[in-house]
Length: 402
Image 1: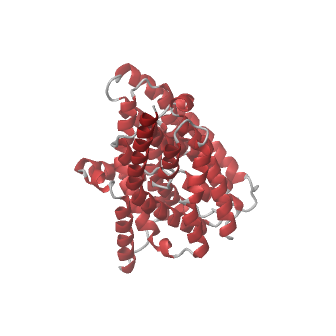
Image 2: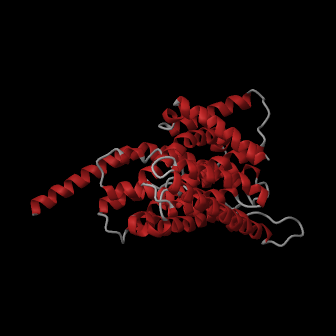
Image 3: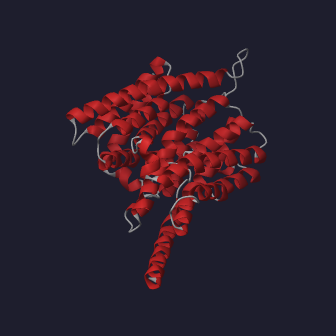
């Protein structure tokens, strides 16, 4: 009941903010939203007001993350990703897993309270990224179509295909109740994931059929969104994972629908315009004290996670592509920073009191997400200008040599 009520409240609030245009304007300044949320948090705490209920906070974050995950999953056909955009395919199935492994091992070494399972959960949460603000600069620039496609699809694919992995990692990092087998949380997480995929997949397939038959030109995206919402809301009653159900609805609909790319893009843009500003503001408000609680080792981890550990795996994944070296360097740094999806997933862990080293996971995650947002915001446009200059020089050299 908490999940359904929280989802309804989030939907109503986001509808009001979107219709008024506030969400779209706020989404252009994610760093400012973090600061605004943190300022509100300190003022709220100074007033002596009671703390928010962790169950309601986590339920709201789950609902918003499900919306982002569905919109991301609906952007591509899994069977065609490798052909349509090889760079996104390699970043998703090569760069993201490599980042997960290296980031998790570094967290395990630098943060002694973290067990190896908790370290992998932290790495998985940061792997999700989902930063929408740094894509706008590329879409409107005279960049090659391959780069625009990679920027648009790689974050979507990582969120859609990575979230089920992170849900299982959360099960592995959860302590079993007294007297229960150690693998019990992972078993139940796997079972709920299977149920969620079955439920979301069926509704996604139904939505694609209805959309193709009755809403061929307009409204297919709305039908898919309704199906994903139904899957998410019905999941608790069936013991299924709502997040996996939303992802499955998007993946199956994206695979089966004949809708044009513009329909998919509009769907994602509408969801991210509404959800991302709320995610950054809530993250700043809820994690503000943790920005100052990290010790030196956690600060070092956060800096490494948003710089060298993020860039090197992505460079390795892109080496075998046909992209020129300047484009590879651009994509290696431009994407992959922890963003709205990472922020919402960390908020959803507020009520996961059975997590091993929950406090360390949240503190390290807070530092990494905040650092990633500021770093991406500060470097995205200068990096894009550098790429365009380098490509112009390469084109000029090619013309002279010809």
